[in-house]
Image (cartoon, rainbow over all chains, first blue to last red):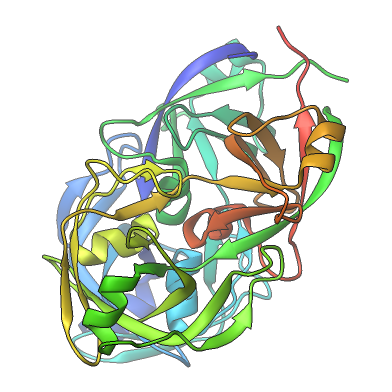
Length: 200
Length: 200
């Protein structure tokens, strides 16, 4: 390493998933429907993977059994990898969660109905979740960008990593499956280092 | 940029493909068969994408219409992305081309027969092709490693990039589709910079 390491961070892989608004949940699963918790997301207390899955139907192809995450959000959001976006026939931008203006829509199919989403498909901007105390220790604030270095035969340095600070968060980095595959990240190689670079 | 840029480089995306030995070509396509050139590889004079494709059949799934590259090689080699390896149900290592000891095999199916490959499936180690004069200008030699920086919303720094020097090469970097998607590399964003870092 030629870097100054600031802090070690666990890297978690976000597979494709959907966040649903309450109205869209009811259109897809029926009136009054409530999501069933499958398992909690370890680094985001209160967030969970639901038992429910949906089908995504794009202009060129479809994806089956796409996991729904809960609880419901204000606006429905679909997160896929670029590989999956190509399968669907979409060209979504890289965005931070919730920033959906101008993103492509998609048809979502559930057991009780369909939703023609007008916008909401994104490639998730790589990011770290961090609690305020750890953020202070690192000297970073919400919406800063940091760099995270990985190890192994496919080691690379993720630049432009968004920092999201929230009291409910525990320190972790989230990347998608393309990014994980490109960096050789899996359950046996899931540690990164938040680093500083010597400036020019 | 906080880096010392050494040289700009075009980044080319290597989709999944197969190099065939002459005996394997004949098993798949028939005795005496010769590959038909579809188009030359711009940065590697003499190498070409063939009209011929094969099917790859792994323990968990298969890939159709996998392009054959020519001319024939001493040993058959299959290059896929990690995403595709998971579809096939294989766990190939990251290797430089031709370094096939201990890699998984696979069944290859052609129009006239099949080959049960004993070894030869790899994830290609990211690399640059470079001619000797440009290598001298950069101060690198065959099998060195360099770092290549990219730009855009998914910008990252590819570390551990293998240098391959050959008089027939023109300067270009080769990455696979997972790496291209992770870095946001496509035909409209295909330039990287070979960089040096200030050492600690």
